[in-house]
Image (cartoon, rainbow, N blue to C red; front, top):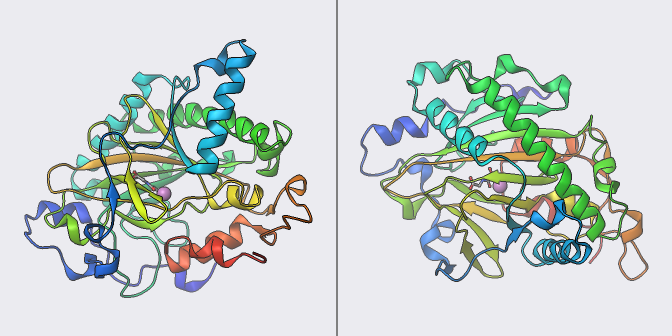
Length: 361
Ligand code: OGA
Ligand code: NI
């Protein structure tokens, strides 16, 4: 691993500590240039606009036409939004609630307890407060905890919080349910692309080899929410993301053309979105859509993002069945390791990475 990735370029400041210190103005390091401030964009957040909400109930039943309709809804959502919410997804609501509560409890502990898990930029595992090692970069208004659940050889419970005492078991339980749902979603996406049901999972290395990592985001209250972002605009670098959003605080915004749509979380729903590797595999039939998180001055927000990724050393390239004379391969083959190294060095910059890979168009 490159030497520059072994430590952070500047001392780490926990955003949560900053917020709790009672400051009325935020440090300059968090102030976005005017063109990147949330206040300067067109935001569609009236109650009627939302990403599609899809009921997956029919997929468990045997009514073929209802199944088809559901798959069709997923297909449109992937093509038109790159984002959707799912309900009746089979994951216990009680577990979802417990997952949010347990992680809230983790972040509410004293700083010393959390510092024990401070992360570094070579693996990112643990308690962190920045992405990227560029000195002087403008930072986001959030802290996070990052850990690996899959593949089994990367699952190291000793790197997970020992406190609250229920945390490690919760991660195991949540990891199992969340990856199971990701597996079901991958089948739907494969079928919808006209590929065999297992095509995408196999391209990711199969059930035993896929990567699944969890990033729990904590967005503290912010005294000047118009000047900063909880997470800057980005697309997720991996395959697919399953997000468990905060129950009562909105914050996620998804790009739609030239404006942003604020996601209104539906009770007991997960938010699903396509990552860059899915854009590559589908030869851009599915897009990894840009999104960001805004913060507010009233309430902290917690979210759990499960990143479902290809095995890191497999070449990812457009599915052959989706490459034609009219639509040549838009991306070269590249491993997720190579792709991720680029991002971990630079930080997240909108969609520049996957776009810059394009070979045609
Ligand atoms: C992410 C992300 C959104 C959210 O972790 O990549 O986009 O609502 N999170 O926290
Ligand atoms: Ni994201």
